Length: 231
Image (cartoon, rainbow, N blue to C red; front, side):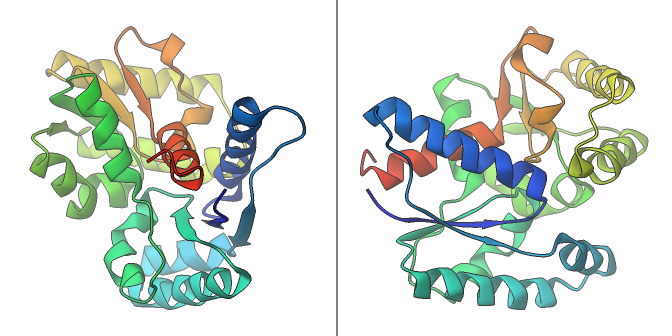
């Protein structure tokens, strides 16, 4: 079993889910008291969030590069970042380490293709929805992306940062997300990507009649496969 280097804290709410799901998956495969070999570096999300707000992505790269180097020194065999938005800077982070970084979008695209989804709604932080780093990967794979209106983007983003990142799961917010998803499916989307690692705490497959792609669960599956040399 490889040692997993988890880069988390963005937010810690989703990092807890990563840790739990990875260990549950390993235990299901091996039984007994088996669990995953994990090194976790959890950053201070306030500093990361402030840098995002001010557009200081270079500072984010510096913080996370230092974190990855700590995971390298600790003996990690590969890196997984417990966040969708932070994958914006994966090219810069990958250039600073010899360790593989398992990309959350690559894993998600693989699952979309398995279910033959060509038209996907994308929900996430405003950075994920508005900037090209996420959408372009999907488009290059032949997947058409449906995005919320500017007004609905603000709602999605606000719920993430003001509620989900703080463990607040509100029925009113779930209702808003489902409304936004219905709007996008009416426009032609045949699947929905939960493109923020916290959204899976609010929206579940049983809430919607068409395929839901929870990127946290998808990423976890890819991490476990890689750790066990299944892939």
